[in-house]
Length: 103
Image (cartoon, rainbow, N blue to C red; front, side):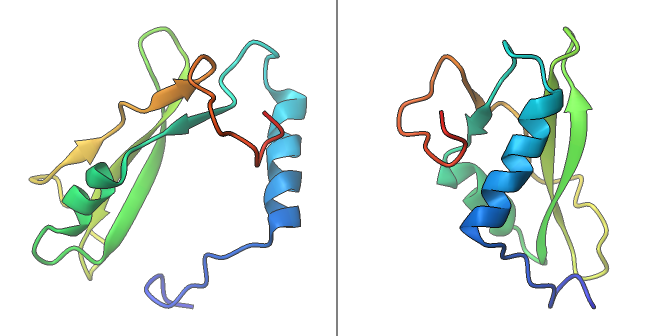
């Protein structure tokens, strides 16, 4: 299946199970989730020729896991001249409204 036609959807039950799987191996004091405003993704997707968004698993200077997001073109090549985002709002402490992970 082509990345452009891949069905990315999962059920609510599948999402909950994946989150539980992660939490079983994550430190109890670690982040549960993070938030990005829509504008960050809109900025990536608004680039001329942008066909989607790729994420990279990463770690900050203290070793905390994070994600990096970058646009990709139709050839699935990273668009490195455009916006690259990471600076999410972490939960905890900013957890208002989180329900999917039971937080």
